[in-house]
Structures are given as C-alpha cells and as structure tokens.
Length: 379
Image (cartoon, rainbow, N blue to C red):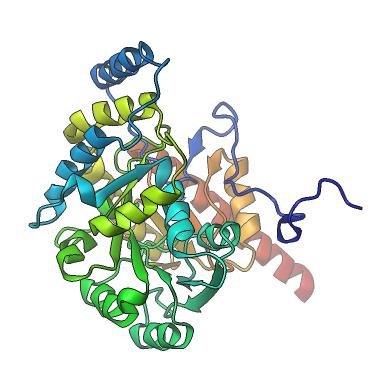
C-alpha cells in the first residue's frame, strides 16, 4: 500500500509552476509574462480603499453572481468589439485558470474529449486530466501558426466537445486569423464549444481583431481574458469569459458557492476604474517586443512572430546551458516550448538591456568554448 492514496494518474506528478528566485539574487525576472509596470500610488491607494471598504462586511458572503463586476467587465470588453456585450454573457473566476477548469467541468468530463494544437499552454492537458476529460493534442505548422486543414481533419476525426484556441498562443505568441476561428466554430457546431484564450489579447498588433467580434456569429464560441497580463494585476487573480448567456449559465452550475471573495470583487472593480492607467504601458511593451524580435534575429536566431508580451527564440543545442548561463548573470527567463527554444517576457527598457547584454555574453562564451574545443581536437 502506497500512501497517500492519491488517484493513480496523479501519483508522482510535480505541481505546475515556473521557477521562482528572490529578486535580490536574480534582479531581472522575465519568465512569467507579467506586466513590469505596477500601479501608481494613487491607483494603489484607491484599490486599498476599496479592499478596506469590503473588509467592513466580511461577516457576510459575497455576491454569488458578482453582478456589478460582470457589468463592469462587459463595459470594458465593449472597447474590442462593435457588438454589445451584456453582463449575462460574462462570467469571472479566480484567474483564467479557474475559468478554463469550470468550462471543462461543464462541457468536458468522462466520455468527452478536449483538443488543442501543440506547442501550446501546458496547463490545458492538466485541466483535462483533473476533470477526467480525454485529451488530444494536434500539431501546429512549422511557423507555429494553425494548419487549418490539419485542424479540420483532427476535429472531424475526434469530434471534440471542447477546442482550445489560444490567440496569441503561449508559448509561441502566435495570433489566429478570425477566419480560422470561425471555420472551426462552424465545424464543431453545437456539439461542442470553441474556447479562444485571449490572455494576451491586449498585446496583439494594431489592426488585429479580437475574437469578441465573432460572438454574435457563433453560439458555441467562448472568449476568455485575464487581468493578470496587460492589466498589470497578476496578484489579483481575476479571469473572465464572454459567451452566449446559455454557456455562462452552464458554468454557473459547476462553480463553487461564493467562489469570488468580496475582496477580489472590490479590488477588480477598482482596477477597472483605473483601466487607462494600468493599460498605458501596453504600447511601449509592444514596441519593446518588436525591437527584441529584431535584435534576436540580427543575432542569427530563429524567432517566432509574436502578438503577446513575450518572445520565443532559439534554437540551441543545449538550451538548459543557455538558461543557466543567463541565470548566473542575474537574468531569469523560461525554459519552455519545443526542444531547443527559450521564452523571454518583455520587461522594462532597463531589464531588456540587461537581457541583451547577458545573452550576448552567454553566446560569446559558448562560441569561445566551442573554438577552444575545436583547437584541442585538431592538436
């Protein structure tokens, strides 16, 4: 008998999590796609006041349906679509992670299938595992875009109940064309739902449409967002979706009672009141991202086109050695994605300068070591 008596498929599994190091030891942390620009003192004070006001009634349960917050989120989403979004179309939870889990609780489960296209967000198969949903991963094209014909074939063969289409995709940063999303919505039909994960949607390039614009055309479409990235509120843990009201109602069935605390709701509402300020850095982060892509390509590296606040680059024969070399110089990035690739989050101008200097040093040292080894072999 092995203790604890955990489910067999969970035995020996390590919990999900990116590496964490103290800031005093690793001052440049570019591995979790956070917005490097925090709220102003005035914004933080307003948020603190909202939390304090909510604290006065913590003896009472929060609004189970978080109606005020859903109304505010619907108003915020209106900036990305010409179509009206109502509070009944919106649902929020503790990060988009919980939103995704609730979607699979409602639409996945035993005897049902979820599909996505790798490389993609590593938590999707874990949501499937945790809800006893069968998981099937197709493949992306060589440029990390979606091979629509291959995707059609997989969907036709597997008949999934849930399809995950992150746009921009993590870890590649690749955005999807609205036509591809619409085609898969039509192919899946009302047998299932298509979830477009727009966690990094605010970082997409100018002129790129949000999947929110497609909501009136496809009843089975779900668009998810988060306040963790562009909104500079990773510590808040607030994710949300927009969909047909019937889908939001289905998620309400599986949510735990009072799943969003009074504090979370109050702080999220305060943050939304400061949306222009909290989103003010998005344009500069886009510019820094594009400059990083150009610089990496000038080094002769392969770089994926990115519409997010991170860049996937490679390829390295030993990416772990490069990652460790950067860490030794005080720069933490992410060892993720296909073999040989690394991902760097976009930070402040100073942080990106430190990253460029460190990567240049690591590559130069590796080149010198290779030349030394070659000379030894010849001698």
